[in-house]
Length: 257
Ligand SMILES: C[S@@+](CC[C@H](N)C(=O)[O-])C[C@H]1O[C@@H](n2cnc3c(N)ncnc32)[C@H](O)[C@@H]1O
Image (cartoon, rainbow, N blue to C red; front, side, top):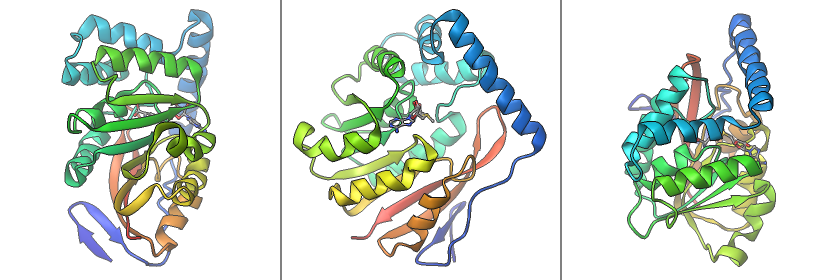
């Protein structure tokens, strides 16, 4: 085991689970948040993503990407907890992206578009992100935020189940290989999607795959897969979920071929 910055590098080692148990009080608090989210969505006939957009437009100028991202973080802090990457993880995420300097990227789980816009802000002018989102309302809201950020040329939002969209990327969008993949959608599906990405030969030697939330809620199958596969060199970073204060883990896996 080799220590890297504040990350821990496991390479072809024994499986180490990153799942971290959380206290019963936090579990109750999270269910409470989820319940009131649903109530608010039903009463207001909108989604958190639409409420985020209204707040962003009041607090950030069109095209001002740092201010837009900051407004989303402020919304999460002051109004309601939302499942975006969040400020703390965004710092670690940005370091990883800046290290690997990607051009063509895939994201699974768009939600409001926060991480796609953050990633887009670090790409060269001819960089491209394909981001996949299952929920049609979230897609509509994310499209609006992406346009407000002025990133519609760089970011293409694809509506559908990631497992069905990935195999169509080459034929429908002329994608050959990804330099960077961010997996941040339904945790039990992380491993299935990584296998789809490998089967579609969308990875090349050096492609960086980042998986979020391996500490909580956790994705045990994915966690085990990347650690046992000789095709990945993994670094695990301790992170925290904004506002909930829950310890989490983000994995960077470099595809070795
Ligand atoms: C944690 S959120 C993504 C947050 C986003 N990356 C950000 O930082 O702003 C997860 C998203 O994945 C979407 N999702 C869940 N299952 C999916 C699937 N099978 N295919 C595509 N998207 C999915 C959810 O609707 C949700 O919007």
